[in-house]
Image (cartoon, rainbow, N blue to C red; front, side):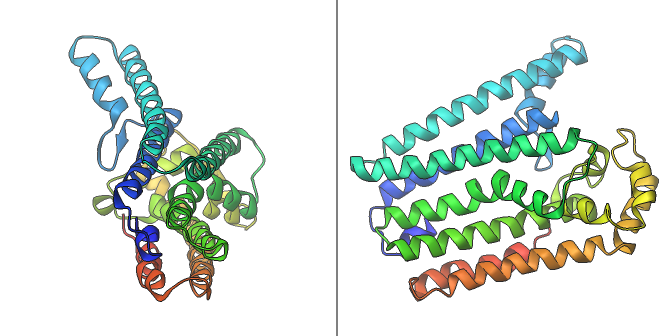
Length: 295
């Protein structure tokens, strides 16, 4: 909506339908992501899986079967959200040519997200460690495309912006989306649980392949980190050792600087002559918001 309005769009009913389509895509992907990760908590509360797991347990169903029911319902809920996301684009009232362009952007977001999710799953199961560049590419596909790049691209296209303006805003979204995910990975280890609403031990127990971990794997401190990383019963004391080692080897500082580098690239895209000042005023505040995230 910000891209659409700042680039001169006036049909807010159509834009709202397309924006809502991306919201449903986002909902579907995080619901399915929680299924893949077997997570029952999202944003500090029980998610779809958790709600239906608890209903089943209350009805007397044993825990393994109750969890399976919760995860199954979440798969169905995500499927419904995906289907209705496309329906919202179809109901936006735009012409056939525009609808085709929006479908192409949406399809690319869906394919990229699926590819990124698959890479994330593969990384977690392979014994070899991905490089920082491979992790960044995975995070671009899994998160940046559908949550930043494609929505602003769709808004610009719907507003009838020039190809140069569309490319500049898409580039902004891609880079700020990568910065967002790197910061998210930092919060997953070093964040304040009261502020983030999620545990800071889960990623370490999972052995999640992030920029932090990929960088640390090439440092001497990796010997200590690898002893504990990925232990499903990792204690808070052991997690503290890992955090300290990640700081000592420079991984935390490296990830923070990398996030800022991508944020700077996003700012450079906004400086394009193809974008009006109104668009810059709309999106420049997002850069510092992403870098200053606490949740």
